[in-house]
Amino acid sequence: MKKIFSIFFLCLLFACSSKDKSIQVISDETLISILISMHLIDATTQTHNVLTTDKIFIPQNYYDSVLFNTHSITDSMFRASIEQHTLKGTIGAIYSAVIDSLQTRKIPLEYSEKKERNTDSKH
Image (cartoon, rainbow, N blue to C red):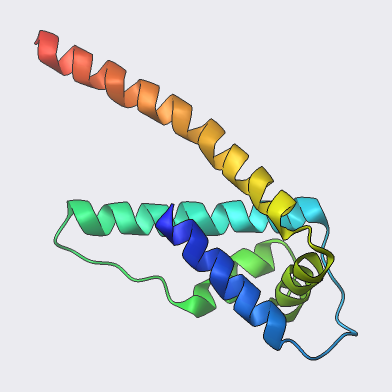
Protein backbone atom coordinates (compact mmCIF):
# COMPACT_ATOMS: atom_id res chain seq x y z
CA MET A 1 0.00 0.00 0.00
CA LYS A 2 2.93 2.31 0.75
CA LYS A 3 4.18 1.74 -2.80
CA ILE A 4 0.79 2.70 -4.22
CA PHE A 5 0.84 6.01 -2.42
CA SER A 6 4.45 6.61 -3.47
CA ILE A 7 3.55 6.15 -7.12
CA PHE A 8 0.43 8.28 -6.67
CA PHE A 9 2.58 11.05 -5.18
CA LEU A 10 5.11 10.80 -8.01
CA CYS A 11 2.32 10.96 -10.57
CA LEU A 12 0.93 14.00 -8.83
CA LEU A 13 4.37 15.61 -8.80
CA PHE A 14 4.89 14.91 -12.50
CA ALA A 15 1.43 16.17 -13.29
CA CYS A 16 2.08 19.48 -11.58
CA SER A 17 5.34 19.96 -13.46
CA SER A 18 3.95 19.31 -16.93
CA LYS A 19 3.90 22.43 -19.12
CA ASP A 20 2.78 21.29 -22.59
CA LYS A 21 -1.03 21.36 -22.84
CA SER A 22 -1.13 20.14 -26.47
CA ILE A 23 -0.26 16.54 -25.60
CA GLN A 24 -3.01 14.00 -26.16
CA VAL A 25 -4.42 12.32 -23.06
CA ILE A 26 -5.25 8.65 -22.88
CA SER A 27 -8.56 7.01 -22.05
CA ASP A 28 -9.48 6.26 -18.45
CA GLU A 29 -9.47 2.53 -19.18
CA THR A 30 -5.95 2.68 -20.61
CA LEU A 31 -4.70 4.80 -17.72
CA ILE A 32 -6.19 2.37 -15.21
CA SER A 33 -4.67 -0.59 -17.05
CA ILE A 34 -1.23 1.04 -17.10
CA LEU A 35 -1.38 1.92 -13.39
CA ILE A 36 -2.46 -1.64 -12.54
CA SER A 37 0.47 -3.01 -14.56
CA MET A 38 2.88 -0.61 -12.85
CA HIS A 39 1.72 -1.71 -9.42
CA LEU A 40 1.89 -5.40 -10.32
CA ILE A 41 5.42 -4.99 -11.69
CA ASP A 42 6.51 -3.08 -8.58
CA ALA A 43 4.86 -5.60 -6.23
CA THR A 44 6.46 -8.53 -8.03
CA THR A 45 9.86 -6.86 -7.88
CA GLN A 46 9.47 -5.98 -4.22
CA THR A 47 8.30 -9.49 -3.30
CA HIS A 48 11.21 -11.04 -5.20
CA ASN A 49 13.67 -8.74 -3.43
CA VAL A 50 12.24 -9.64 -0.02
CA LEU A 51 12.24 -13.39 -0.65
CA THR A 52 15.64 -13.78 -2.33
CA THR A 53 19.15 -12.47 -2.04
CA ASP A 54 19.28 -11.75 -5.79
CA LYS A 55 17.92 -8.21 -5.91
CA ILE A 56 16.38 -6.86 -9.07
CA PHE A 57 15.68 -3.28 -10.02
CA ILE A 58 13.25 -2.06 -12.66
CA PRO A 59 14.59 1.15 -14.21
CA GLN A 60 12.14 3.96 -14.98
CA ASN A 61 12.77 3.61 -18.70
CA TYR A 62 11.28 0.09 -18.50
CA TYR A 63 7.87 1.71 -18.31
CA ASP A 64 8.63 3.81 -21.38
CA SER A 65 10.17 1.05 -23.45
CA VAL A 66 7.80 -1.79 -22.59
CA LEU A 67 4.66 -0.76 -20.76
CA PHE A 68 3.95 2.48 -22.59
CA ASN A 69 4.82 0.94 -25.97
CA THR A 70 2.42 -1.91 -25.28
CA HIS A 71 -0.37 0.65 -24.97
CA SER A 72 0.97 2.80 -27.84
CA ILE A 73 1.43 5.86 -25.65
CA THR A 74 4.31 8.09 -24.60
CA ASP A 75 5.52 9.20 -21.20
CA SER A 76 4.19 12.68 -22.04
CA MET A 77 0.73 11.28 -22.74
CA PHE A 78 0.79 9.39 -19.44
CA ARG A 79 1.85 12.49 -17.51
CA ALA A 80 -0.72 14.68 -19.28
CA SER A 81 -3.45 12.20 -18.37
CA ILE A 82 -2.39 12.16 -14.73
CA GLU A 83 -2.30 15.96 -14.75
CA GLN A 84 -5.75 16.20 -16.31
CA HIS A 85 -7.28 13.89 -13.71
CA THR A 86 -5.47 15.68 -10.90
CA LEU A 87 -6.69 19.10 -12.02
CA LYS A 88 -10.25 17.83 -12.58
CA GLY A 89 -10.23 16.11 -9.19
CA THR A 90 -10.92 12.71 -10.72
CA ILE A 91 -7.59 11.05 -9.89
CA GLY A 92 -9.17 9.55 -6.77
CA ALA A 93 -11.74 7.73 -8.89
CA ILE A 94 -8.99 6.44 -11.18
CA TYR A 95 -7.03 5.12 -8.21
CA SER A 96 -10.16 3.62 -6.66
CA ALA A 97 -10.58 1.56 -9.83
CA VAL A 98 -6.89 0.57 -9.69
CA ILE A 99 -7.11 -0.47 -6.03
CA ASP A 100 -10.38 -2.36 -6.62
CA SER A 101 -8.76 -4.31 -9.44
CA LEU A 102 -5.67 -5.08 -7.37
CA GLN A 103 -7.83 -6.21 -4.44
CA THR A 104 -9.84 -8.46 -6.77
CA ARG A 105 -6.61 -10.07 -7.93
CA LYS A 106 -5.38 -10.44 -4.35
CA ILE A 107 -8.30 -12.60 -3.17
CA PRO A 108 -7.57 -15.59 -5.46
CA LEU A 109 -3.88 -15.38 -4.53
CA GLU A 110 -4.67 -15.48 -0.82
CA TYR A 111 -7.03 -18.44 -1.38
CA SER A 112 -4.38 -20.26 -3.40
CA GLU A 113 -1.72 -19.67 -0.71
CA LYS A 114 -4.07 -20.86 2.03
CA LYS A 115 -4.97 -23.98 0.03
CA GLU A 116 -1.28 -24.66 -0.61
CA ARG A 117 -0.44 -24.35 3.11
CA ASN A 118 -3.26 -26.75 3.99
CA THR A 119 -2.02 -29.26 1.43
CA ASP A 120 1.56 -29.00 2.74
CA SER A 121 0.49 -29.49 6.34
CA LYS A 122 -1.38 -32.72 5.46
CA HIS A 123 1.79 -34.34 4.04
